[in-house]
Amino acid sequence: MISFNFENDFSLHNQELLIKWVTLAIKAEGFKLGEINYIFCNDDYLHRINVEFLDHDTLTDIISFDYTVGKILQGDIYISTERVADNANDFNVTFDNELHRVMIHGVLHYCGYKDKTENQASLMRSKENHYLGLLSEIQ
Image (tube, rainbow, N blue to C red; front, top):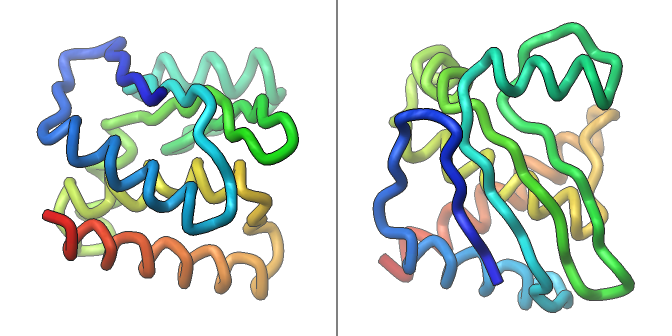
């Protein structure tokens, strides 16, 4: 089950399509969907989580808490829509494109992909692009 939760004034369009897309990506990676909660929030909300739980005093666009058991993906994915908007502007992409990238990024972490090294980040970006392409195909 995928659920969307909102801690700010943000609203998400095409929720059914996004559920289908994330579910397809999870299956394509050889996993099963357990329960994934997306929590959309502002910078202050996510910053507090970053400080309290990760001891990082920085702004970020996403924090994911992974509760995966075996091949069943589960977790909470917090996304700052303010960071997504700023990053979309910085990268010269649409808000929706950047939002979808961040949404699949969290799921890819649950699938075992990392992004700490240059090679890991390159593979992560390739996977993100692949699944963004899949989203375009199923729309």
